[in-house]
Image (tube, rainbow, N blue to C red):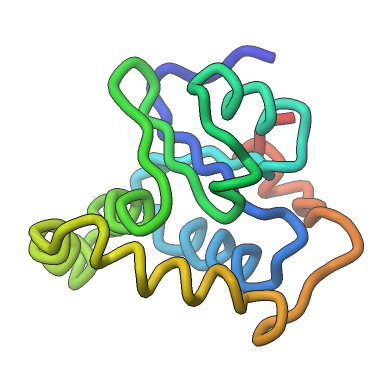
Length: 138
């Protein structure tokens, strides 16, 4: 699979309802078509994580890859994504990035640990509709 060089890639937990809802929200707000998506459980998601030395046993909820530049995990990934969504998010994200990562990740990890209990879990990864298929890496 050809990885787009001009798109940021979001790896997400494909069976998590919270994560799937977040992906749907990002797609709706991504007016500049910045992002592409892959579940962490997919072959391409596992390959991209492995290439970057990301242990999906430790980081199992969100990764944002900016090809050729860097990758981000946990709260930093969420804030880097928010910067590209425009509006209030683009204003708030840089401010929150000044909070030390360890402190931000305490809250992030708490939500991540409880996401299945609070939001539920699917038996399989989300299958995108035909019009959204181009936004997902396979």
